[in-house]
Length: 551
Figure (cartoon, rainbow, N blue to C red):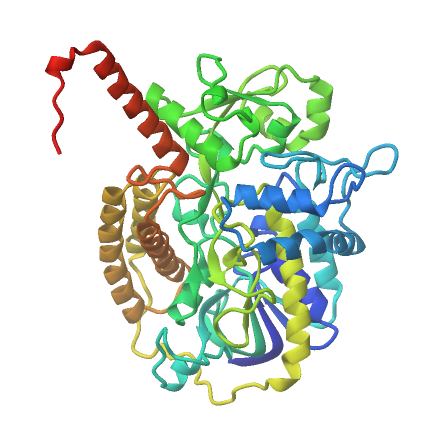
């Protein structure tokens, strides 16, 4: 079946829904959701959304500087300035759509402070900001007559000249996107969605890891589709591991303990009840996430333990329950009273800083295709995301993409020559165990070899294992009918390959990419200083007659 829409939006998080709302007055919009509308990373974002609002103590320059520092100075400054300066206007847009941010008694925003921020600038709704934003936008989207929501629909591939029999390579100029092939899970059929403009807003890819805070729909679908269509993908090595996911064996995804809790005053401790962050960073528990995650990882490995603790027992119990009601409720359901007990935590894959490469208008390298939200690489995050910058990036770039798309929409038309999906000669896949077991293997490979701390040896092993899974899965895909599980596996392998390859290509430790083969510059200096000190000691305590040097 062929369906035609002016705008095809793949993904139903903050980025996708806000884009849909901004363009729906000028054309028909299809909003593709692989599950339900709530099943998006936005819904699970606890901490908040960053924006300069208190001009008495804060300003754009401070937020820009904090973002550049967190990104290890490889963020695109133009992207950083764009997001920071346009943030306040987009906050007002969210409020217009019904989002209720917490305020103090005097009517001012009740701002939080998180790791890496120099000022209190995080707007929030208790400890479930993402859910508040998502539910507000869902109501707005459902109420708009020009937006058609397709739940339980799964985008299999984007459509380009390749599907017209034209050879397309990474060097082919002028690749165009004409829509997407979309699986209707209720009918099992793959429909052809033709569009004038296509928007990828499929979120992250952290479900490729065994331990993740993301919903398990975060399999990197949009990034994998664009990569297979020969689009540019960048900075996939920069995977942010949230330092404090609730440690409860068997839970997948892991429940997130927001960074705002450390901003509130919670302290990291080992299983002996001792603080340890002073060994790693002068900012202690409020150091950027990559530093805290590596510190926790190191403590766990040195002590042979599987988690550390977050201690908030010294804070006022009623205030704690007021600020973090959902965390309090979740932990209490597991027998942990956070006002009296330490919270067991461990790092988990949380956010992707790279993705589909886009410009300041959200345009990808493929014409008529935009990418916004976590699946895109705008350059804002660089080597590491500053806490709570992601939600504001999603709405700022959705706004930029919407404005650009509206300006060029009249230049485009539907490509009527696109053939419908052909699955003739394929069979239904009865061996689901082949898919589920391969998914587990991808999770194990990524967790063990491409995690918080990496090495060339581990990355090469991951590459070789993923290559075997790739060949097996492509053969399976060619002989079986398309299913969501099979397509997700295929995408997960593609994503694992991209993370591994781009990690191998970066011959340094930078931001979130940390490898023992290329330590951070500061650590190399530290090691060099220790070595020189040892040489000085040897010379000092060794008789001159016994010292020999060789060249």
